[in-house]
Length: 407
Image (cartoon, rainbow, N blue to C red; front, side, top):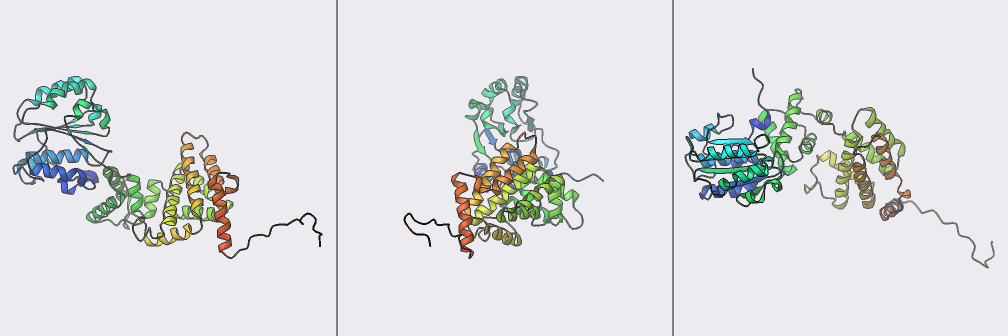
């Protein structure tokens, strides 16, 4: 029995309506298709894994659909079936990887073949992936063809670096920039896929998967595919996601943040020791700590952030975050976040990552050694918090005034 295809291939969208997070691109394209106002050349740009090549294939299907002009391919005609997910493909829709076919000779060969009419379809469509890899000479060889193509020819360029596509080509295309998918929308999509796959996904593990994918649908589905492959009968648990993705467990972050609030250096450095002894990456721990401090900064500034959806965290974790935020002042939190952010830059190429991590924690623990404005504000907030908690400020030692007799 053959293993199933990867998730990002099994669930590749077949219509523009199925493409998530790119409505600013798919809606205008659907209107253009329905009104039969399709341009002869398009440039799709954006980060990897956000739907450029998929949208190019959908556009090619819609152009060659027997019911065209139509906003979405019908999925029933021969052309739609050939170009469907898992279909045999069409000789009239040619995908070219410019990373390996970007030279001037490849461009000349494409130019010679382009003038032949399509075999079975209305249009001959060239999808040129990684278009920024085409050499300047290759683009110049294509320039006249892209500028004045025969009526049966359409070009779709897809690239992650549109600035490397020469201006003369860009000026002859309709440029559509794709974007990274928002975390909330991506999380909802993952829950739908898990439901379709019949697998349980722990709500605490969902933010980790979304964060690992960094807004790229393909990368996120690859991460989820890895977790589904290693999941047991209970599904994708939080512990499995933490171990496979290398993130810091919440319990360890809770321990570190509570120790920072209490200025408990012993606990802070024991957490650092646990990070090192368990084989975790110190830089990843610093990244996770910065993410936690970011959540606390937002929660301190907007106490209703969890209720309003500004912070997407489970209910029980929200209570812990609110409790942790109350242990800091706003200046303390922003100062700690600044220190961790600066340390992340220093981690690059560091030969002693444990030492860098310990120094970072020491700077957070000792605001008294920080003579900056943030350091003074952090010390002032600690004093105010003590006083508001019922403590009294120590009485200053007053020396007798000049000329006053000591009693």
